[in-house]
Image (tube, rainbow, N blue to C red; front, top):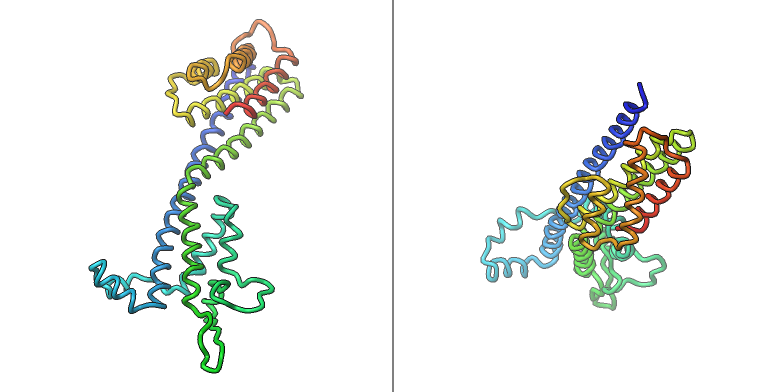
Amino acid sequence: MNSQKAERWKKYFVVEAFIIFAVAMKNDLDQVKADVKRLHTQGVNLLNAIRDEQFPEQMEQHFTNVLKKDYQEFKKGLPVFKSAYQPWYSEAVSLIRILLPLRHNDFVRLYEKPKGRQEITRENYVIEDYLSDTVVTAGFDKKVVAGPDAAIPAFEQQYNIIGAVLNTIDSSLLDIRREIQAGLLDAELDKATLLAKNKLLRAAGVVAGIVLEKHLEQICERRQLKITRKTITDLNELLKKNEVIDFPGYRHISLLAELNQICIQNKKREPELSEIADLINGTDKVIKTVF
């Protein structure tokens, strides 16, 4: 296989890897979004279930007199809180750890019995207490100090945290997508560096150019810029036109595009090691600084 064909195949395989990864990533993140929506819906049912279990008369009155709905028909669709909660919690806590990490400890705290808790009150009664049928009484008349109904506010807060995840999920998934894409581009750039170390300078320049092109394309897509041609030069012009980059940044990318063209099209001379180093290092700088 001659060098020209080898370069075409290298470029083909790198592009294919990008496409396969992008499709898989989109499917995975779309599934995460669907899972959060499902958990939110299940949370509504669980909230109604725990309220109905503790205050059935009030719930029936509310549905019959206020909502004008068939209460008995409504009850048929409710889960049993104790059996349905644990699977819901296990899935929800995992997603919150990823999508809303600042609220993860709050979510867990509302479920787990506090370590070192000296006494149980309505204020520190948690869902784990509810699941174990904990009831605290005081005095000769066994007045209930804290019972199962005290778990309702705790679950309401958990449900609201899931609501917060749902409200911020698009930005959270965008952040995750950016991190994954950045990791992929870094890995491809490492391949270019390895090719350069093995004196495969033209191939290294082709791979670095593909990485730069893909990064610029992602910037345009995130900013909803209409892409007509997906070359480094065209994408660079589009970003400058829409004032995403300033003139020094535009000029820097233009120089990188020229170095890439030497690797792709200029057969009159081989690219120099210093040029490939400039292309790889310059691409790395763009990936790290231009968004």
